[in-house]
Length: 92
Ligand SMILES: [Zn+2]
Image 1 (cartoon, rainbow, N blue to C red):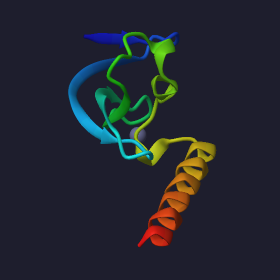
Image 2: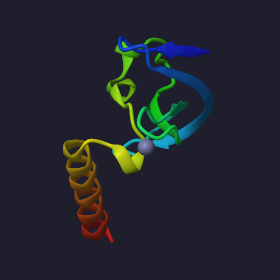
Image 3: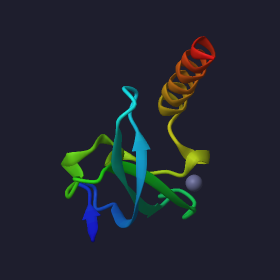
């Protein structure tokens, strides 16, 4: 299966993988493969397994590999990772 975003950017669906939600229940995520618009490097995004078109997930807004992500996205990913780290530490 393929999904093409509004800008003509293509994602090819790969495997599904299990994902544990914050409440401890499990769901499935679909892994989508794309190539960085800037350097062509392969990268992946993950969406709920039910996603079938680009409007189903904000992840389809990605255009770039980790190296070329927009700065704003870098900061948001960093903050998410930091929050997860703090949560893990608090539970340990
Ligand atoms: Zn890149």
